[in-house]
Image 1: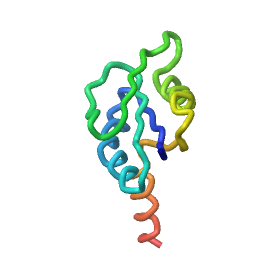
Image 2: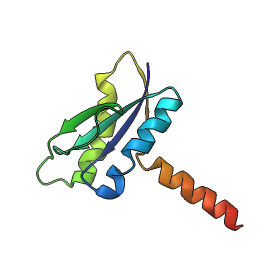
Image 3: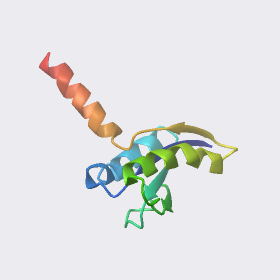
Image 4: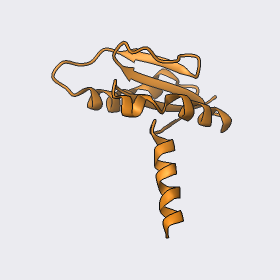
Length: 101
């Protein structure tokens, strides 16, 4: 199976991208897999969701980055790639910059 590994914490600036990003990766043939820091209510029907406790003394953002590196270890038989949950924002920003030039 092809799998994309994403991660986030409770920051709503990133959480909002889960539905659209998960659907985009599914259309490309990848199983969206989200590692999330904290017990956050999120749509788990869009892909595989793994919830992790925050490590005290380390920012939740850094926790999320480490989780993204750890998650592929859970899928030794899958081809995994790491992605950014806000991919759509980055693509939209790039397209609007191109239109301005």
